[in-house]
Image (cartoon, rainbow over all chains, first blue to last red):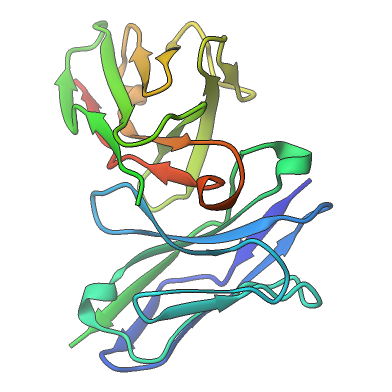
Length: 114
Length: 118
């Protein structure tokens, strides 16, 4: 079945540092890929998405590129801020095999210190 | 972007009582809604998938008589935790999916409901 693997956390960075959170996936079909962010005590917010190979999703300075050859969708940001502290979830959905269901990674806790 | 609301955001109840949580899509019609449960510092666990006008599909290990789901309209789904016990205390999150292609092919999440059963 489909699966998503994220780099283990927690990740702690200083403000303005470069961020990478690795995400790889296994899917039998042609999934869409997502990054969601969860701030403390809140639900999930869609951060960015990509629906086909080589697409780049971007939002709020975050980027991720859908790499079919390496089955990856790594999240990057050039300069993190304290307000980026949250839990980040990589996810996929494959309408042809699982409809609209999302398969989540385990989440990566990011803490950014001033 | 699409907005999904949940009500209440916080609920404390006594053991043995039932609690109803509402999930609404505010600016789009949701053909499918999902209910998740999240334990502290863990990922989301899908409990059930509900399609408007039909019975919910429950994940393995989720008691359908314990967690009643109703998706009566394209903008509202409810989760009722019946005869709640302390082990049901958790963070419950819903999401809504509008179906179709393009930008609607995305799940949008509610802010969550924290349930504490005493």
